Length: 470
Ligand code: SF4
Ligand code: SF4
Image 1 (cartoon, rainbow, N blue to C red):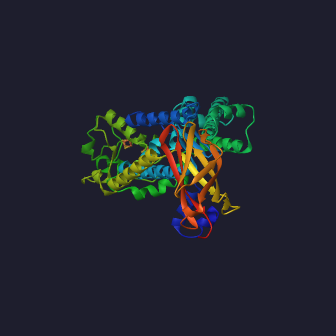
Image 2: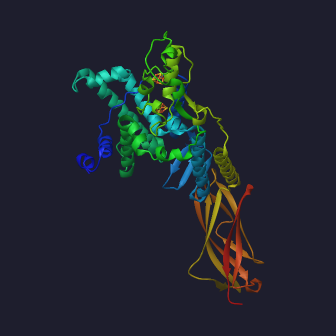
């Protein structure tokens, strides 16, 4: 539907909706801000970027410390190696991550959005580059008003986009390096030797980073991110949010610092709009809590600075709860926060327990499908293939035993079985029993596999032993 068709479909409300939907985006030039929250945000951005970019280059026991080797179906995380069989641990991790998001949102609003979301982190990085090359907010506005082909503007823009693309490319490369050893990947990339899928993902992440952090910025948070829409379900009047104290600030109005503004009936807000100029999503927090607010607290730092200059008390915009702003009692520890915390702790304990109990050894028993059983030298024989998976960080010698029926005999190719770290070893075995010891046509037997040098590294797997009708 076109703008005109939408606008002509009803009354004045439709006209407003149509205009809002088709409104041209106004570029936001966030003003630089200093203060406690800016320091916290910058620290968080630096730490998270350092972790992301450096992790693929760390080694552990001669291999990449963090590597998600999809073709081999192995996830290496420092000393641990996870296999598809460890899906339960992964499920616990995802549940804990989701619960911690709910917990921190209920407790302190959009902490994730303001300080840790990749969209925020990379946008901050791109804004630093922009400020470095184009100057502060007013210098950037002046530059953008110059003709498109002005040499000064052209030089600054070319340099900025070149650096943005380089950062975006390295972001894409680093992402791939979590799935393929970084050294070999870098060599292949420099020799233009990447496969089609690697090339696709490299280009995809390069242009996604460049587009999201360089061009779209607040549009991603406002129109694309689903979290902004459903986070209000986790909010209540005791959730910490960035709030403007309208009782104290209104009526707003300009004045000199020396004025007796109270006698003029004015509140503490001097209507300087600096809180709007620093906002990365371009909103005015004085209009109340809005879904576009990512909780970055830049407006708090900016307003505190203004209050200091006017020699008013800080905190006209502050991190507080709606109950506190309304003069009511505010509780940090309340049922929903306690429930999130308890469930998170339970899953955390389950994750730790399964990790501690985890035996890095897997044994699969596959029966020979060609023959149910055969009689040889007066004994009943069943044939199996064992698949031994050593999920430990080092190779082991194992011993195999079988139990479940009296006087069982086991015949294998190897007396002691050596399996390399991370290897899958196929071992054909024959198990024989005297027909007189069988109590039914189908009996349970158990293959017991134990590492020679560590008895705790042991696993038992059930199988069926078939014989003639008794
Ligand atoms: S920065 Fe503070 S004083 Fe200035 S407009 Fe915003 S709320 Fe009012
Ligand atoms: S309103 Fe304040 S806290 Fe919210 S996004 Fe804007 S600057 Fe950040």
